[in-house]
Amino acid sequence: MSKGTKIALIIAAISLVLACVAVFIIANNFFMGRFPASSTIIGGTEVSGKTVSEAVVEMNASESLLIKVNKAGTDYTIPIGNCVTRMSEGEQVEEAKSEISFFSYLFHTKVVKVLKPSTVSIDDAQLKSVIETTLPAAKYATSDAYFDSDWNLIAEVQGDDINYDEFLSRIKTDLEEGAELNYKAEDFYFHPTVKAEDKNMQKVQKKVQKYKSMSITFTFGPYKKEVITSEKICSNLVLKKKKLKLKTDWVQPFVHRMATKYNTLGTTRTFKSTLDGEIRVSGGSMGWSMDEAKTLYNLNRALKKMKTVSMEPVYTSRGVTFGKNNDIGKSYVEVSIQRQHVWVYKKGQLVMDTDCVTGVPNAERMTHTGIYKIYAMQKDRYLGTYEVQGYHTHVNYFMPFNGGEGLHDATWRSSFGGTIYRSSGSHGCVNLPPAMAEKMFGLLYVGMPVVVYDLGA
Image 1: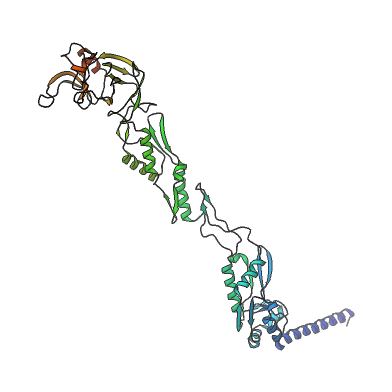
Image 2: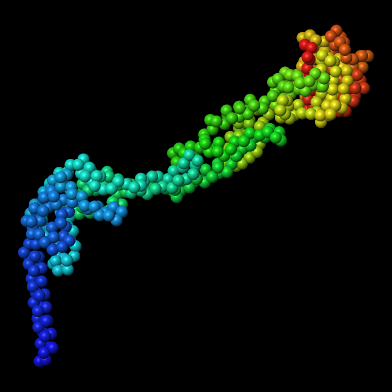
């Protein structure tokens, strides 16, 4: 036998002996009462290499009771012996050992056995205090997705704040059941209940975008307007029971403010007269008067459609323009009772004027002052009846503006102007020389303003 062969045989023999010794030691622990030498946790307590009696002592000792928590990659070991008192019996521990396989001894595999203590007493408040003061405070608070004051969708935040009620409940259960006390903090983080990608949040955002892209404009002639901006609309949005609602309590006051601002019917207006400068004229039947109810209805409909729209208010009465001081425009008839004269303007230019005779200045026959509109253009008709007015007079041209009051020819008169009206005036109409009435009939039209004023009243 060669020398090399002898050496190999010796090494093999020694290895066999060592293996036998190792197997003997392992077998001795298995059969003679010790737990595996490493990574053996029984009832939440590390008992590696201990005998059953030693393990019982360890399991019932306060200082051995630890909680292990991993948070954000850092391990924290928390002693909770001062918060918990528990007792395990030797028979329970022996039975737990008997359930460990020989291969766990042989290959040093981790052994974790749940072993319910015979008695457990837990000081909840102290346990909570120890854990909360040991673990680091949250860096980020968990929050739900929400819409900010400008209705931008803000995504949810997954924070690192621990739900301690849930965490402590789990720890108490594990203590009572004798389970391993090893945890990942992230398993107990609060979680957002509302997320930006949730179907309802996306639905609300889509609706918000429609409101943000819309505006409603009310036009008052070519130069004046009132705009309901998207900002105004969005400031009245509310999210209630997961549904986006538009508050409308502001809509009616908005319409009323427009009416107050632009209505002119019956108001006192500034008028630039031909000979007497700027004067103030009150009353009459011509002017802007908004139908607030119908305008409100149209506005609410437009808001529901969530689209940009330009519209006019609904009017019960209309003026001609939305001027700075009046609403009559540049084409009108001017009647001065004091001067007993009529002027006709077309597009700002004087096209004719004439003397006239107005009504007798008393309650029954006066020509009423104010701003009116021509509401008819009639030829060859009779005015009044003997039964009611006491007269029945034929005229060739009649241009009424205020009930039965109108401009017309007076063939029975030979003179006009001056103070004739005071004693021999009309019954309220504006009498004109026949030729002037014919000319005026060719210049006037239905809807043309008539301004009647009396500075001598």
